[in-house]
Image 1 (cartoon, rainbow, N blue to C red):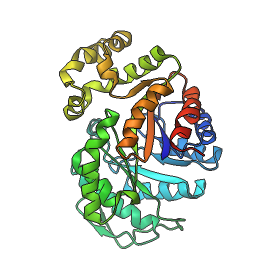
Image 2 (cartoon, one colour):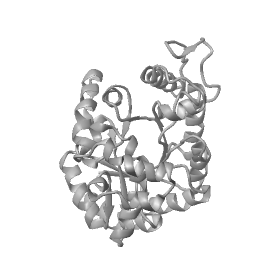
Image 3 (cartoon, helix red, strand yellow):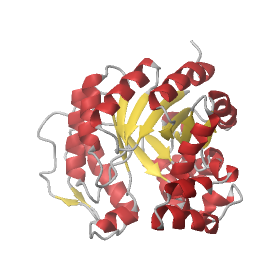
Image 4 (cartoon, rainbow, N blue to C red):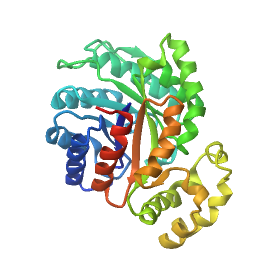
Length: 332
């Protein structure tokens, strides 16, 4: 079993150094940072993390080929892989349509754009000519890196939709599917396997991370409050297909959306998050976490990725997962 941590890019840069060093000490395998628009730069954060750590793999979750040109993504990927001594993983996907439209950009052919970007980036970091005549990428014969990439940088594809989930199996080295709730893995896996069949590969040949939200603390109420904040902010935008698994609908989140996003009443919004809604993620002690994770392991999960909020005390959450969860699934 592999274990990773995922962070939003909304924290002071120096905080990530402490968290990455703690994660490395706790034997996590990977450390991922998002690159959401108008927050801190993941490339800068991960460069600092690379210099502050020695063994843990680092990655972006995610970059997109709309706001960053695929050539620049390849440049960054090969450079950070060099800086980190071969520890960088490139997480890529189309990004959120709302975010792209904030910039006045059209969200055309997102899957095609991602797939063509992946093909081009793979060639560039393999030190090959990446001339391509695609629908969204048209490059001349001069498309190659002017420095030696130390290897083809592994690409992890972020996905939620069935078509993009299938492409994880078809073209990627790994996958970062968001699972709301964690048990959604059972629905995700058939799509990934369909892509694997297309590529002639097996599940053991890719790194499919079960990406969950969690909030871990010895204080159950504090853990639940942190996750409730996250759900209050994002719940209304979640797919009906995901919510149906918990007997929920988008309409259930409308009063919460009103309180959080229109009235600006964070406390009232949090109080309206029900225990049923909290099952979108996992909140509580490490015993609570283990109970839900055992079900994932029974489904065949081989990589668990813990995402924000992580807990009211992030360093304590990293320590507790390292002491109670990692040894449980990956004993010495």
